[in-house]
Image (tube, rainbow, N blue to C red):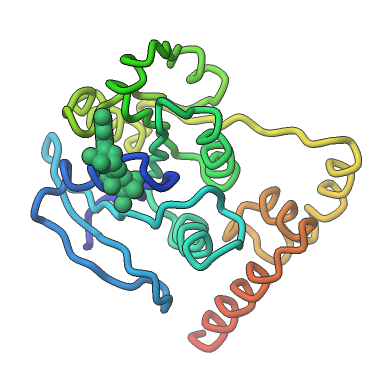
Length: 231
Ligand SMILES: Nc1nc2c(ncn2[C@@H]2O[C@H](COP(=O)(O)OP(=O)(O)O)[C@@H](O)[C@H]2O)c(=O)[nH]1
Ligand SMILES: [Mg+2]
């Protein structure tokens, strides 16, 4: 997997993640377990304009909290394995429900493409999506596709290349919380930065700690333990 750019596919269940994954990677796939967890994820490879990519189909989740092993697995991959790019696949017929995960991904990582799938279904239902406005609001590229009909894929592939190479800069929207929460973030942030440095996104981690995310704390201890044992 050396020299390949790594792309993670995140999304709610049934948004067409695996359809997109299969279309892009074809038969160049294998199944593996990541980070010692029991959840299986598929990894596949593809090339575009002379560059090689390795894509991982994360478990379908509604959030990146620690509600289930699937959510922990998806979160751990994005936060700790740090892919070069995360694509959030949204169901174009149920954008409102799907935005929750998209916003959470934008809180943990910078390089993100929001990919609105099932656009054929959405159009049939008379749903019109203003992706340019979404792009401006979210601060990352938004691409409409139909994974099943293979529409929008050339644009997606070009955008993948441009985001990873930095030609398209990403500046994800920063979600502002209520005053009290923001004050607490401000008081936690310096400590979090001191302990974790650049390894974990500090604002996001402060929020998770405020929320009392116990399994994330365990994960951090576990990973720090591994680092200390190796050094
Ligand atoms: N109409 C339509 N159906 C799609 C599209 N992409 C995927 N699907 C269908 O949506 C269902 C869920 O797809 P799947 O790839 O398994 O979703 P996943 O759970 O996110 O991996 C399947 O029946 C797909 O055939 C699309 O672009 N348009
Ligand atoms: Mg799937």
